[in-house]
Image (cartoon, rainbow, N blue to C red; front, top):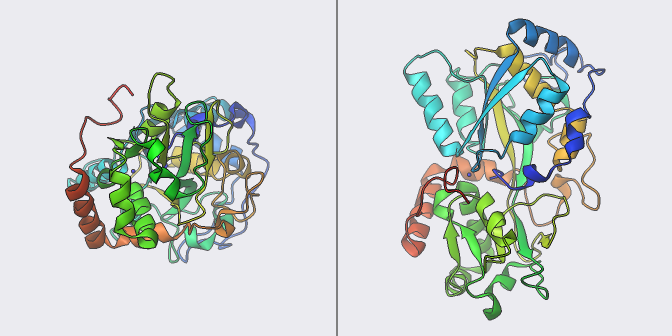
Length: 369
């Protein structure tokens, strides 16, 4: 799973204080699904209701490092000091199974909101009545392709992506603005990659590359003896370490911040992965007002701008880049349909497993990397 990512750890600390509560959403029905009107309260009115409810919200977020989403917690609690946001980060493919188990057991919900890479789960959950049909503040500005067409049960809140990244101190003459760069003999034993058979967004990256370059490209990549790891933050951590020989990857994201000795590029010779991380509120959420407040906060223009590319149509792109829908060599909506074809995803997963072996190691959340 994408992402979850290294990039959230590098967001500006100014995010925590940037959101105000002055604005209101559009009127009833403005951009919402057929069964919901967009929230009409101000964010501060929702805050008041959330505090009266108990001042808590529980979020399960996809990711592969325990502290990966702490920036959301810090910003949210600074803006709303009477609220406590409890975030549990784990691989999306594990979170969704726990939601299904909870629903099957007809047990009281342990969680309010879920924001996951497993985008294919949300239409199913909406059909099964698992999700609250609710259009949060800012919903009317979300691009139509990022949300359900018939209800407001789910919507994307974050745009995530992979980048080519390398350590310029270790590789001062490198330029990984294309995938063929990874095949050069001088980079043998210096590449670190996430197992594609352990993360569907990474699997999609390999699928896109091979659709353009063919299986021979993979043969040459494997001849480079890359180090395979679990988790998509792990490659960034390893290439950044001074005492590690590993220096380059295409299965992580650093975001748009400047990082010492790290350079990033988007490839120009094949498609790279980007997607809208979907989320929703459980219908039997123990803290529904808290969940509504969190969604409103996540969708504010200020938060979206600091995050990078936005799911909203009215938020400018990061400096020097077009909007994600206009970015070359990526289709931010393609991951959704690809994930829906679970039979093909499974075939691809096993095909790569046959080539590189099963994913080795403990969960990236507890591997101390």
